[in-house]
Image (tube, rainbow, N blue to C red; front, side, top):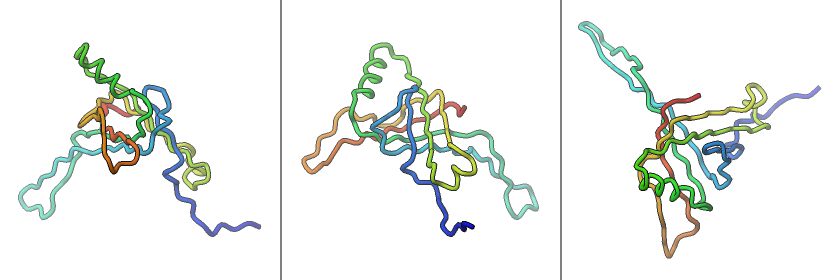
Length: 144
């Protein structure tokens, strides 16, 4: 008879990131968030407010080691045609040794209509630096 003594939480190291269907092999971190737009209000006599979701923002961040000119290519294309680039970003968490995987399997989030936001790094030089990590923020239109 076998007994289980230890919990096996999901390891953040076991996953993959895809950008437009291509695995981002230089990915270091990926975070995708759903932030509700919350209305809050009270009526006369209420001692605590009511809350209601009115919509939401889907956003995220990818940190990757620079190994391709992918980001520069997107910027050059925008400068040429002035069309906002939309991409699809998919994060897959697949820690086969975790309790989560045992119960639910692979956890996949696919964001469509993603638009890059914030500062997009073109170059980075630092006499005390190590390697170049690009930190890329994005907003998504939907999750499928």
